[in-house]
Amino acid sequence: MTAPPHAVPIQGTTRLYAVLGDPVAQVQAPALLNPLLAALHRDAVVVPVHAGPAHLETVVRGLQRVQNLDGMFVTVPHKAAVRHLADRCGTTVDIVGSANVLRREADGGWLAENFDGEGFVAGLLAAGHDPAGSRTALVGTGGAGSAIAAALLAAGADRLFLYDTDPAKLAALTARLDAHWPGRAHASAGPLPGNVDIAVNATPLGLHAHDPLPFEPESLPTGCVVADIIMKPRETRLLREAAARGLRIHHGIHMLEGQLNSYREFFDLR
Image (cartoon, rainbow, N blue to C red; front, top):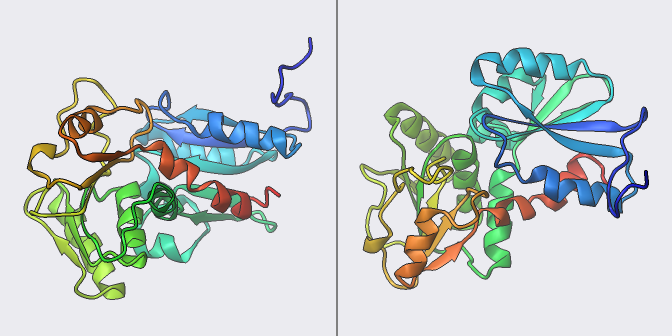
């Protein structure tokens, strides 16, 4: 049988990359990265691995011992927990407290890094939404949200209003950000503190059709950009309702697309 165009033939020499999540039906990394690996003539493939929180450490420890596995991509809800399963962490991981990728090092150890925030900002800039000087509201301070918060401040957001239903997690992230960007990150009592230029959903709300809205777009000002980090479905309920009110919308896939160059450098995919 002849492999279809751009497919990666699986053979005994194939290197593996895993995408860890719970669920994994929504992950877009295999669809985006496997064509890249094929175009680069790499004998490698990215596959989803469905791991529940209770078994995460068992799964990761097992994968770390698979000798032809070179890396792991990490999605909801494991980004905070997986950092503790790495031998070393990059600077961004130490700041935000979460990781979205792990790489096997030459000495056999594992390095954790987080490119979610970098990719999110790159996606914003590519779409013409520069966060520099903005007032931005971000709902959800979990693994992806924490990285996005740091990247928005690094990109020059003037005020960043953070909201999470977990007060302890919200306070901890705000304190870590304040140590690097004093006076610009603010914990909010509600998801929308008022007049903002960008409003970001960094929660899982929207993965399922019956999910409630993470925040109500009707109170946002004209010209506000409403961004969602959920990639599947592409048009979440939040984005549909925001668009219906004439607001500018920004899709979740842009965050993954914005990370491609970072992934290529991190895994030496040249």
